[in-house]
Amino acid sequence: MKLIIYIYKKIFPIFLGSVFFFSLVLNLVDLFINISKYLQLQAPVESVLKVMELYIPKTMWYSIPMGMLFATSFTLSDLYANNELEALFASGVSLFRFTFPLLLLSIALSFGMFYFENSVVVPTYEKKVELQNKILNIKTVADNSSIIVISDNSRIVYKARRYNDSQRRLEDLYIVFRNDEKILEDIIYSRRAQWQEEKMLWELQDPVQYHYNGTSLELVAASSGLLTRLDESYEIFRKNTVEIEAVNTKDAKIYINHLKKAGLPYQEQLSVYYKKYSFPFIVFIVVFLSIGLTGKTKKNVLLISLASSMGACVLFYVFQMMTMLLAKFGVISPFMGAWFPVIVFTALSTILLGFSRT
Image 1 (cartoon, rainbow, N blue to C red):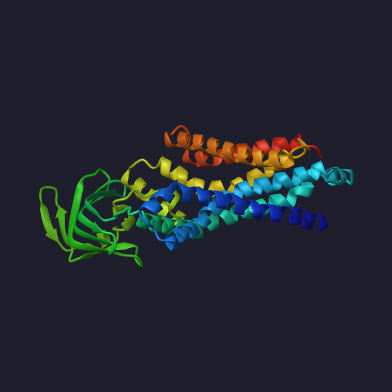
Image 2 (cartoon, rainbow, N blue to C red):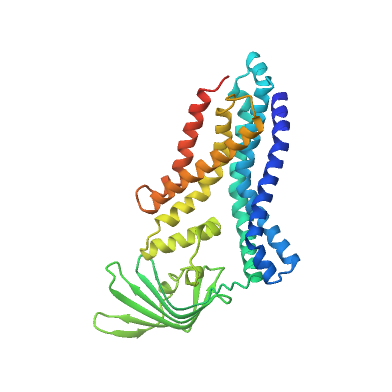
């Protein structure tokens, strides 16, 4: 227990300081990229500071893996340089046993990063982008016109004259229902359709239904069975394309299900969706990796730790970019595109740990 408290006391101040440093650097980079536009448009200082404040969760999310890797690498290298690890090994404590609490901490942080992104990073980053666009006079309009959306694996086709995003309303809506052989069965028209969040359905105003009897269309009473199938999310009718990385897992799943039902390509989006679950485990990987690299040098501990932290993170990001591209073009599955780097780096860390001095 004393060893656990000792290593946590050593690593936590460095970890918190590293996260603060990397977050500050990322926030300042974003500020310097846009500072000329802020000055040109005479943006209020309070608004600029608010943008920086809203950007903090996103920068922290990026900084936690680098901060944890640097803290672990520096702490263990410093203990090795001061011969403290040698004393532990001589007393019968192995490197794995001594660092096992760090692995548990990294797993906890990995799960924490996932929930942190889903519940904090996504909404604050969305507000940051909205406020920044407002300051820079960048207008994003989600209203859409002349919309055609294919759903339910091409069995349902929506055609609307206009979509009003602020009211989540479709106007002059035609809905075509087809069977599995894509043969016309029914057409429903409504002057206005309103999205009902509680029911997760479109509520049609005075719907008019026409049934195809094989030769012609005949007017029939609106079928409640068909109306309950109108569950395509309002987000699909927006003008902008949904970016999976910029939404939470719930909205991402809705969008991917739409692509599946519409028969559209969805491999890239699905791999990004899986990445939302796999990426937080980079914290576990970098800790495991830094443990495996322990004892390689006693000189320039700070410089070597910083370089290894940046290098390992960059290497993981680049490798994951490659696998994501392979998933995008269908060379590997979306699941492997997101999780294969985690598997490879975990195996690499295990091998390095086997060659470490214990």
